[in-house]
Length: 117
Picture 1: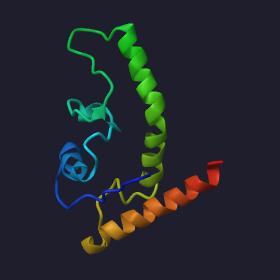
Picture 2: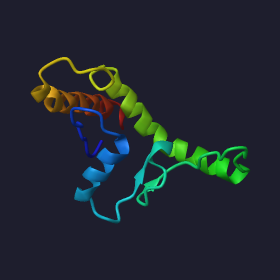
Picture 3: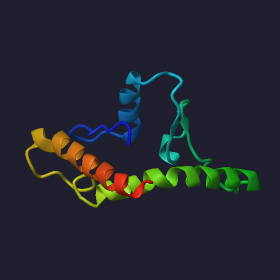
Picture 4: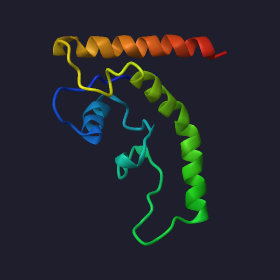
């Protein structure tokens, strides 16, 4: 976990939040994401299946390789969602949201630190 963005109140898509936060990164920085981020230049995403057409074997193989690289990130997201703050409606004081999210991410980093040799 390198950078955490706690988000903002109200509806906002992930891609728009990503576009706003990447302004602080180097323009050569590369990212990996799921199919929802398809079309961004700096993001490596899996190939989507087109209507009425299957993916080729090489496209499927590339998607599997990307999935192998991304599985660690998906496991991190799962660990954060265990706390249920990031996946459900936040019912506490909204000024405390970012502080709580950062605390949860710190706890997840602490837990991961135990398992990395």
